[in-house]
Amino acid sequence: MKSKYILVIGDALALLVVTLLGFTTHGEFNASFLPRMLAVYIPLLIGWFLLSPWFGLFNSEIISNSKQFWRPILTMLFAGPLAVVLRGLLLNAPIIPIFAVVLSGTSALGLMIWRMVYFLINKGAGKSTG
Image (tube, rainbow, N blue to C red; front, side, top):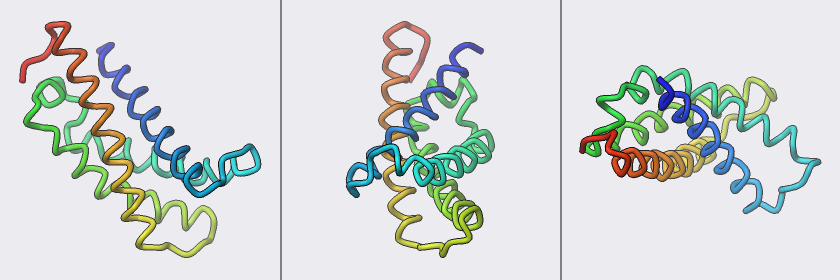
């Protein structure tokens, strides 16, 4: 059970890092952009945590199997566009398809890196089978 909390916190932090890096690459990383950052981050969290349980991303038999690393990527292919739609509704702003593609791809990469680190740490501790 403790490891699931670590996964949830790690997922949230991975998505936060991706969001912050996205704003940094656009030269928009300072306190004045905090509301805009939250307008991306919160819908992204909602999309991820609504869909990830459906894809089994917190089941121990899935998170301990290296052959299941495709699941976070597939999940984010749905969660990213959902987040962009939620953001558009929240801000009453247009929904930009390329933003959904980039957000999904970079978020999938960030989550994949985090989930691999988590897997390797647990495998090294003898808690995982691959």
